[in-house]
Image: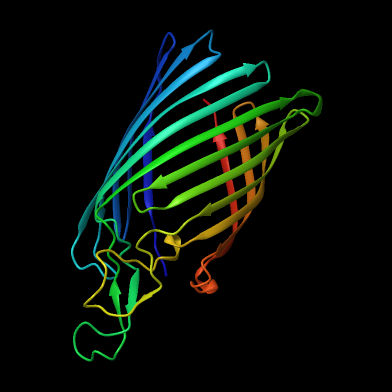
Length: 283
């Protein structure tokens, strides 16, 4: 498999007293997908900036281009809303709480995913056949998120713990726990180890295999990402401040996914080593 993706975004922040507005537009394209997006975020500082209220909206107009099981272009739209607060609980403690809602409609299938039926829908009824998956054309998701950051001045460090809960109209419920440590070494180096655990239940229409195409359910998918599973991520990132206006970042993460339903083949779940490098410039 070989692919090249081109993407870019443009945003700017406008401030007026305690108000901040950040509009954004984005565009991305690859050989089988085209994405256009717009977003607007608003922040309001209160209580001498000890409290910040945040509101956000984003919308994507995507086009799934023919490939895989798909023979004609299909449209997909997603809208996301978020509301939250950042609250300073003390001189060294920050609480963040967010609630989000997302709605997707249109072609929500993965055009490369199929479901194996024990009988062929046309031709030999005793021959198995791989047919395109069929997901609902609408999806609603609800997300709650909370994090607590504590500064540890004697150690020149801070620690952040977070929890995220998600439930959607596919009947998938998911929990994410993350713990990160930020250790300052001297004036120019920041080391940040982290660990994350994620667990989800299966979608209501997840099937590894189906017996009869003629009596198939309304919706069906064998995408392992909709199965009951868990993932583990551990990693570390290092930031080096080379100049007042230049910081260089390097990181490594180990990602492991494994199934929990006892039915899906363990070979379906990937493992990955993730390396990142980057730079930040202030001007």
